[in-house]
Length: 214
Image: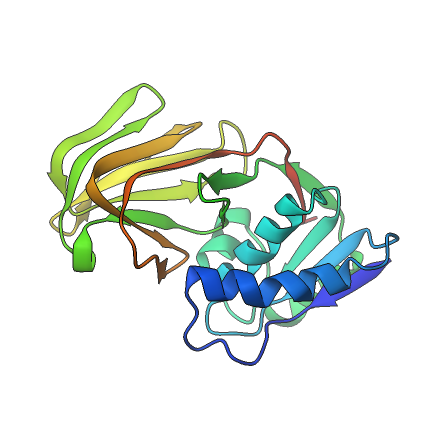
């Protein structure tokens, strides 16, 4: 059985908590019938990747990552580019008839899921102080503009790089990125968390997810 989830109407001023609160009842209602084995995320909103990631995070919390998930975005996003997904009408056709593959599910220590891009940045978008590691490789120690993280869609799971003065270094692939410092702000899919944390880590969840992509 297939269920469809769509964003709530009030999507203009999402932050992480309000997005989670809005998505939770939508996903829970869609999963109300235990026979649901495919969820179509029809993300017709300003931040499609953010809505998609929030839906996946709810599936993770509900322990329903066995469900095939299809992403229908109105226009190209980072997530559609990373996973080579169609958009618009072609995405709708794929969502209804395509088959799913298992992919590493990239999450962080705040139980958020990453489908497009995250950044570790400083206060007010300013310089980030501290240090960051990708597995055993040190990305930086000192001050940089930002650390950028993206899922790979394949093992080892993700990639990360450092941005300095508007320039970004080459991507490095690995299993986990951890950044620590006096005040680390986390931006997920373009949505900035207003509170600083001493450290933030992105890594693969122990259970993969199933994306409709073929």
